[in-house]
Image (cartoon, rainbow, N blue to C red):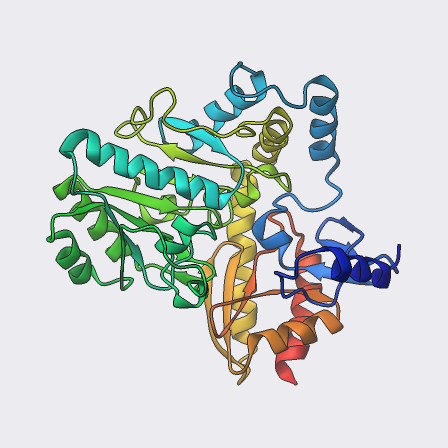
Length: 393
């Protein structure tokens, strides 16, 4: 099928919920993608941070193939090897105690919300179920995770939302103290770097003070690492950059390199909150997804994460060195990078596509880069050449 055939099928048979760019993708190799007609693009998106080990990754594909031939699915009524091995790898590398496997970020965040409320109810009973989240946050598109999301733009049409959330300004510890003093808060739920909000890193001192404040009041500090986790920032989890350990953290996107998987990690404090029947999902810990995730973690070793940090610094320094009027700010960690631009970021993104670069937007003013974590310096330079040309026009 050619690109027009694909687009026609989409327009006739798919709910029109996405503002798609005018590109059909057929295949990929490394950090390069190709249309059915052979047009080449450097990919600075990795499927919104999902394709962590790039395209055409043979060891990853081989792991999926071998597991698919052996066992595709069996349900969580039985034990299987892949999820058990993956659980050990995740807990060791995260410093956490236990893991619950889900299918995507929104579902993982639903789970962590339930975990926080059960922890508080078990110890304190009713009246202590409110969760604080930050303005400009994004936690998912279910009715409950939309309620947690601190951006009004996502709240249209879907009222009433789940109760029990209040938003506070980022990096304002006094605001957190005032809300916690009301006595009904069980948790504070944060993205260490707000992705959809514009690639906005939290202040390190704020996060450490928030950790202390939560400890003082026996309130859980929860980290939404759906986008920042699994090596994206140059550390396995972003909280490791901040020198804090949350009471629980969610992950998804890059964990299985392109297959649907997510989950939440719990500390010693919260690892036993859920008992039999408290939470479940049919496909969580699926053997094929778990086998893919094990291969992703094998490839994202310490040396690979060091390269993520180095390449991220290289990109940020390069963009800053251009001294272009269109560039207002460059921010982020590792290969999660935001470029605040003077103008509509979607217009810049469309121009990048025309010249062979796929790039994302975030918030009201930012271009967002989430390339494959395995991207080469040659691929980075090719993409940056296009970006510079577009921002220079």
